[in-house]
Length: 409
Image 1 (cartoon, rainbow, N blue to C red):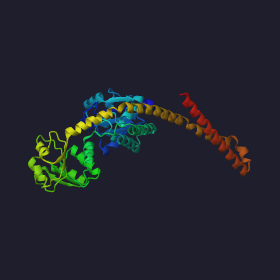
Image 2 (cartoon, rainbow, N blue to C red; image 1 turned 180 degrees about the horizontal axis):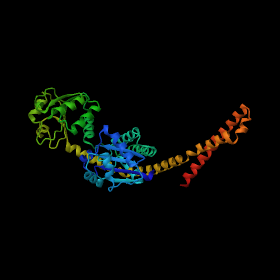
Image 3 (cartoon, rainbow, N blue to C red; image 1 turned 90 degrees about the vertical axis):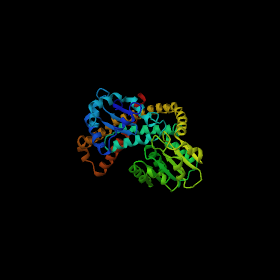
């Protein structure tokens, strides 16, 4: 089974994130497509890993897949994508086989192959990918053992190294700074912009207990959608100047080419309050006019500040990679032994059945007449003795044979 393990990977290293997005499969189509490709390719096991910047096919199959025959798989999984495009995808893919595939999946789950080194979300995504495959009946014994060892490896990495200790994402860093400033959970959070960054940060704040959100966006429907999720209020961006409910935290990220929050608008948003406000401006260019920072009492978190901290933390995480790779090397050795032990168990599991068959033939055919001449008590005692001998004589030789084979290898 080890020799048939293959992984085809599309990641931020070999493909644009938007192109990776085209490879995600909707949940209502996932089961039929995955089962279809497994059956048509005659794979014994199959697992599909899909994240925001990664799509990987993990499978066991005798036919080696590479760029020359990749389009066959693609046509089953993505019938809507043209043959020319599938050939292009095939040329850009990374292919891993056998031990290299094991090393790859360990590196993925340990996050040293991730877009952001040390982000722990990937371990959950790997586990979910296996559980989905298991639910759909696509995985078997080998991928079960591989996934178990993969998760154990990642947990060891996160426990024994500090690769994930210092946050590097904008969302994590912004939240960490809020904690340092002791911003209370009942703070009024004013969100200007409902794009990906603001949505992610707002969800993160809600997850950690913040509950008072007011969302402004140029497209009102997007503001409504985010506000509903946050259990807050939605407003069109044109009404920002008229907002009179005050704020404690202002988060701005709109992607426009001019300052959305002018000194005049900021003055009105304060509604006469003089306490120090937290302003998180993570737009490029900035959404807040620089005069606001100069003239008002604020804690200012800019994207340049977050980037500086992120770069420093990434350097720290990168220094841990050598230790992570040592753990991965040790885990590969452990996995090789686990896999070998399992192969021996599978090869030997027919032996007890054969012994039972011999016992049945002996008692029902070979010694049938002799057994029929015994009284019930004697027959019962004999059956107990034979059963005891069968159990003891099987367990000992099986254990010895397993040890001999393992030590020999």
